[in-house]
Amino acid sequence: MLACAELSRVKKRIADFQLGPVDLTIEPGTITTLAGNNGSGKSTLLKLIMDLATSDSGHINILGTPADTNDESWKSNVAYLPQTSVGYNPYTGQDLKKIIAPLYPDWDDNLFADIVDNFHLPLHKKYGKLSPGVQQKLRLALTIPRNSPLMILDEPTSFLDIPSKQLLMDLLTDWMDQGERAIVIASHQAADMMKLADYLYVLQDGNHMGTFEKEELLQRYRKYWLASELPETRAPGEIARENQQIISNHPEQTESFFHEHHLTATFQTALELEEILTLLLQEQNVSRLP
Image 1 (cartoon, one colour):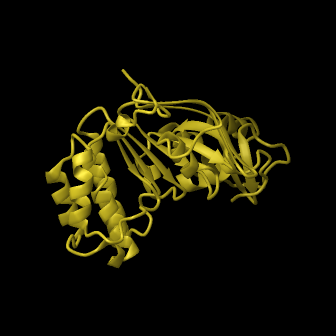
Image 2 (cartoon, rainbow, N blue to C red):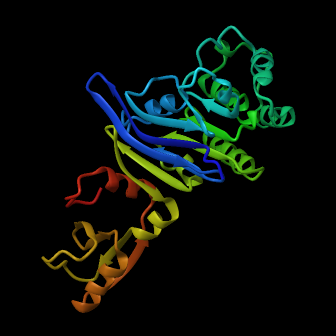
């Protein structure tokens, strides 16, 4: 099956910031979150995918078409939500819908109406007069109904309250159920859109730190509370310790070590995704709990 997006050895330098090399394949039926701290290159990578910035090297194909081709008709098959939308201020929501909808052959009027209703959007008001939260909801309402095979969302939960974030997650889950589609999300808030992700593509300061299947990552990291003081010898898989607590990224090896050294774990738990990402973004020789 044709990949929704393929990036091969993509690099981009902006002043003293270097992104890449990036190798990334987005398959239909998947949600991939670009995770990393602010300034890690997530938004730059999305702009490169959309051909809004030019890479210094490498290749980007979107649905089998080179992104840098002179023919930009492929963009009608991609629903892109940037962090900010330029030029919207003078227009009402209804005006913007009339401008945007004809550009996308699979636009879904019924879905647009449902999102407007659920978000309680005042389509008669000019975009520039809306609060940041309502602006974000309107931009989502103008993006999701495009029904493109590939949807790219840059910080989609910005300015949203908790109920609106949950509604967005429900909308995206339903949207994915409608066919062989893919979503790429840039987010630095693990508690939000990463919960939807199948895969996490982790960036730090422009460097690719790894691509991880989310469920495997959640199973791989565990925290243990021991009944006695920790031995001086570090356990296999141990990546952090404090007092009588150990964090491991190889639980089976760590638990075998406990058994061999007659150590008892009084309690153990999986880590939250935020904790795991913090550890991934730290130095390999972490010696303290985050």
